[in-house]
Length: 244
Image 1 (cartoon, helix red, strand yellow):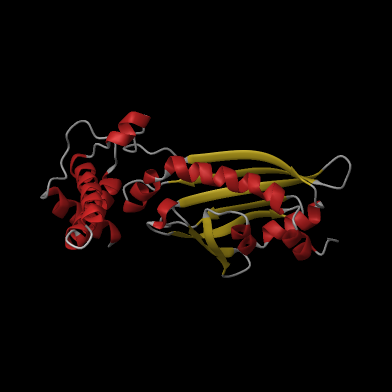
Image 2 (tube, helix red, strand yellow):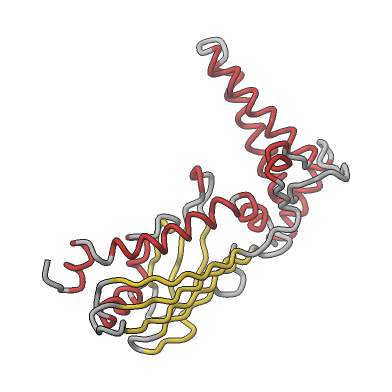
């Protein structure tokens, strides 16, 4: 049903100019979003142009640019930055960090997946619906749309390993694992973290993901590094029952 609806949207927008020019650097899902957002922005900007000429003209210009991007599939900004989302790549992130906190406390914090948005700003929420299943919601830059998916804990080794993966049919495919090792002095924890996002082919969700690939990846890397500071702050110590 979803694929049929997407095809209907694409066919309707094609009649308004969504055609191949041979110079596209945006995939079809992103083009649809640009057309819809550009139409809305142009409409609202023209309505306010009498009362607020400057803001109205600015908004209309931005709306026109988005319509151009959607109709032609060619984004001038992407061209300057050498970005091409017609074949979006998966986001693969690997980071190693060391925190000054006991391994069992760090593991317990990560195992309660609803804690992740405390330091991961790219996550709006993680709701644990059962012991192994959770509902994830990610923030996208600018707050244009939320990305939602259900994930399952796929492997768990108490105190040393935690792995998860999104369930089939999710808007975006996500997988991650964290390995926990005690530092040589026994007072800290070494974490090996791998997080992957795979835009599903042939869906509007893929277009949404490709739209934010560069920024989204940077957000996730910053989130992982942020845990080092978070694990040594009072909020974490209070959660873990450590002395302040």
